[in-house]
Length: 465
Ligand code: 5AD
Ligand code: SF4
Image (cartoon, rainbow, N blue to C red; front, side, top):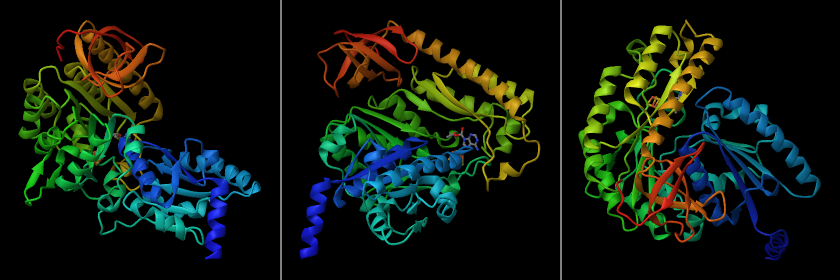
């Protein structure tokens, strides 16, 4: 009893325990970071944006491309200094490495970085409270794929917590991948493809909507392969899920990422035609425009098949904005293969796209292929591709100038009198307006393109998109 009282007294003197989570990589890691903070909240941890103030530092890592692990080790060097400085002031700091590097490297991290107390993989972070407690007395590694579903045991965040994270929220609906593209670590770090039950997803989204969220982005490494079960045990596809999400009061916008061309089924394409809440935006990675390279990547579709899918999507939703991922310098990629990629970009006319130099990932089949492309060639190609993509993005933005669109107001703008929001096509906008509130959807005329975002002014007329 007395010990308990003394402990409480110490806590009160120092204030609540603080957790700092730094996320690398994809949007799913952003979501996971929030859920880690949610898992720790009942333990008395409050989030801080200042690493120096944190009693618990979590690095939520990414393993998708090169040097990810090296980045983590160099960050851990900084954390070590911080831990020593805090120790000199009598404050303890626990250090956690989470995410995909944790999954891939496991105990190796404890060997290489003495500062780390706990290594936890992406499937076990719901166990953080007990693992953190355990790690006070010994160093711990948990990279299991546990039998229990982490989502079903994670606590729901408080309403004001949700609201503080903004009016647009991520929700993981599917995780893992069975596609085994030969360059990719995801099937190894995130495991086999699993879809969450429909009821659990809707319950989470209802909670978000009640806290003021207006837009949900449904996440999955292969989100359009979604096949969750509903209450009656029937399988629901992503298109079907969208219909149910659209019926949640308060949810005005639905987005999703990331998709695979082979899983663009009719129901999903029809949803783009029929559901006004589904935003006219599709991120559909193609990776390369060369059939030879697509085959070596084990993508299991050709460039023409990809273009046919794009045609089908466009005929369902004429104004859809398209986005993609590209890899340049995959083993064996010739100048001719690269030209095929450039041609595909020109043919489609992407509103935006991401491009990466191929980086061999340990344990993936492509890492062991001969004919690795020299770094210099990769640099030349990525430079040319990024210029083409940027031109396409500028052209897309230019066409939208003069249009009146619905904009979701997300935060205060860069300057006083401005608000920041997104168009249906995911364009960031700075809007001259002081009346609208965060979470409102208002009609805005896009007036001019800018370097990072576009400019707009609030109007009263009917929106055209
Ligand atoms: N090298 C380069 N880019 C990669 N990506 C995935 N693995 C690699 C790799 N080994 C890219 C793909 C994928 C995106 C998330 O990251 O383009 O779509
Ligand atoms: Fe990786 Fe995506 Fe291919 Fe799955 S489909 S292996 S996540 S690139």
